[in-house]
Length: 452
Image 1 (spheres, rainbow, N blue to C red):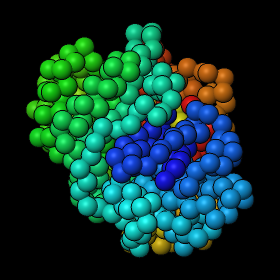
Image 2 (cartoon, helix red, strand yellow):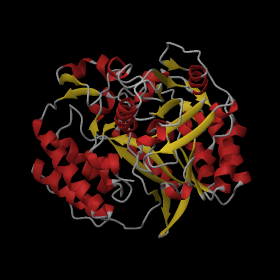
Image 3 (spheres, rainbow, N blue to C red):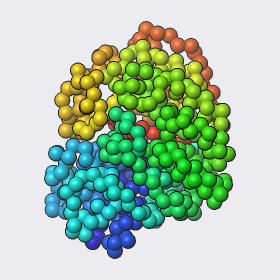
Image 4 (tube, helix red, strand yellow):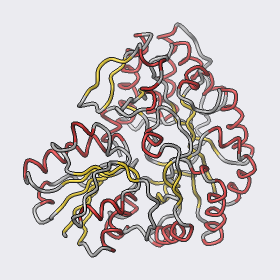
């Protein structure tokens, strides 16, 4: 079979979910081509000489963009088989299966995708069988240099994303991972992870992002990976993503991680309202978040918090307290400005739909949004979110320094809540970060969807 694999968006990284699927398909003897529309404009003529198309949808933005591409494919070749695979494949299945896709595969997709293309369809949407993995076929993708880079010490370095595990043992209610994996973890074999890192380094990578949903879900596996990485490539730096709860639980790891090259940790702060954190089942409080920041910095690692400031329960006072927390803990340069605009996404399989706290704020399901519309308890927060979205998008377009954008964000929040904040200059220390902002469980703005 002649197979076309398409990636629309993978947080600015080279799309590992396309590379992994390509390896599995080539091992079955299929001819595979890959297209990444985040790097090259979509050309419908790409489908003229293929037998089947599979589109990777590891996150919400990718799913929205994938449906646009599926629509153009249906227009050009109405009977060409289309599969949507990845974490978000099962979202809005009642409206996507048929009009946009002939097959949906969420979770561990390689074997199910290969079987479908080989003519052995499986009617299940989620596939969680642990799959042996080969080396991702990165040779079929655009070069690493075209993707997100590490910014450090005033220079850019080529970065690559790899995964040491899939799934997550946590059940944060706003996250899409528990809806598919239901608290289960699938680790990638150590040698597979290391071989993939080897090929990334050979392709020019000087920094590795571990793109696991949570790197410390399997702490012993994570430690083995880092020790082996340091032994093989002692000059390579890296970053990981993990929960505040796990930063504190595994505090004995951070000194070793720092010595091994860990520059920063992405962690979901979300907000500093303990009531909202409890509704989301985050597993931490604002006080514990502060402890985690101190712990990382004492080891020489910078925290990079992600935020979810706008939920049905958000108050203007809560937003002001989040600004104050950011200033007090010297996080102005550590939070990507886009995070100040993020609004809760509620897809049709969200665990939040089971919570009575949400019932009063739900409106209708929006097929175009691929999620439930909701209204906040305080309508002023919706107005503020829209104002901040425009402000931040203008800053991105103008290539404004994050610290300057934060100043404008803080001023807008202060005006909305009748508050004042101390005038604090950001360190402007150019702390290490990637050139692409991290966001996940959110309704993206237009600029978030197109900026790379």
